[in-house]
Length: 568
Image 1 (tube, rainbow, N blue to C red):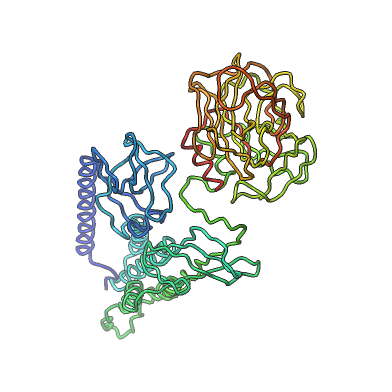
Image 2: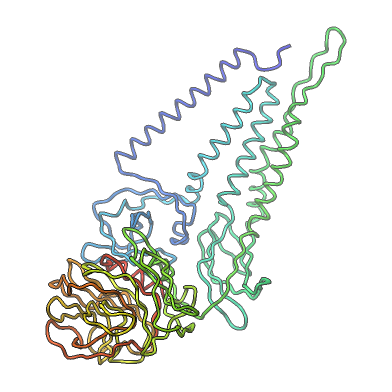
């Protein structure tokens, strides 16, 4: 008696499989040709910034256009990232974009050459299907390979197939979480003794966060007063699909499994010699353990997976600013290594040592003139340690690495002071750990009216400065970036360029070291100017400084905005 399929049946099966494979290949080639000819491209949404317009897991279909307008949803590349956002502004041939869920516009100016195409179709859940398809195919191949390893009755083969397909679908669902998932966007404190967590539903089906029901892509701020043992606030959303959807989801997962259990081999014909034919129990060896795993996976998918999406947050301050930015801490911004990172970046947190470690770049640790005084009064709101150093009029931080005539650079720092006519925030000079300088140049300081000034000395004193009438010695934290390059000297304060001079591309030629908060400041200028001296500043800064960095290139306007936003 033949134990498996007949030879003709196996031949027909193989022909059907090959025919289907060839048809799928031809269809794929045709689709690829159409996409290549029309420029159509497919993208799977990975982050929730477009809210309900294009939730996480959506498939975005784009096509290039000769022109783009405000309101268009476009996909573009920026710093090796592919982003899909909406155009909200246009100035001078460049576009401003924003995610529908974001509270502010993106920090970049987008040229049309960086746009891949306009969204001509958005298919919710299509991105999950696109990402899961290779794994589903791999599971099907593994399952079919198992059935081909030995010739067996059709009942055994179909039991294995149905169990394998069901198990593959459950595993892929557990990994991709297409049905239920949530993400924490930000959080803030709430009185009394609570926290408001801003969350978004990144699954396809609704969920319940506290008393708030969220559909796919919808966000909400939810108050929680529950705490973990360590004091952090916690929130555990739960699945909340309608009962028809819930039952349908269970059925989709379990029907193949139930079908496998119902498949049984045909009754054996009686033996002509009167012997009982031994039943084929091979299916049980596969079905029983796989059945247990499949049922457990479905139970976890429907019940446990959403409760594991709990959030916890420790509230550190009352800052409630929100926006979009490539960086969310000053440390991350100053550590960014493309196209080139900082020569050196220091947190300027001081605390218990005379040295200030470098956290990015190849520069050495800085050396303080005396044991620093510090507090948790900070400019970079989300950075750790939450500390800044007090420069009391006699403190100095020197970078002990002599440089000869740095021709291109950017200086960056956060500062807070109430003193006008102040000393250097940063600068370059040839003296030691103090103000015993013979030459001093490339200086950032506050003049007699509280304007931020950046100056170089290419044979004469040349400065650029923040506009008159604004006093930055106001006790608040401010961000400054000063650059020298072939494009001239530029000065940016609080994320915006305030002054520049394209005609000055060199500075004084000598060997010296970079200093923070100290150094000679005689014979310089109030405000901006070219030539002349009318300001003799103190040789030490009075105020607080945090997160200083030195780069061997000029930061771009976009980078300056990103670095400022990283601290807010």
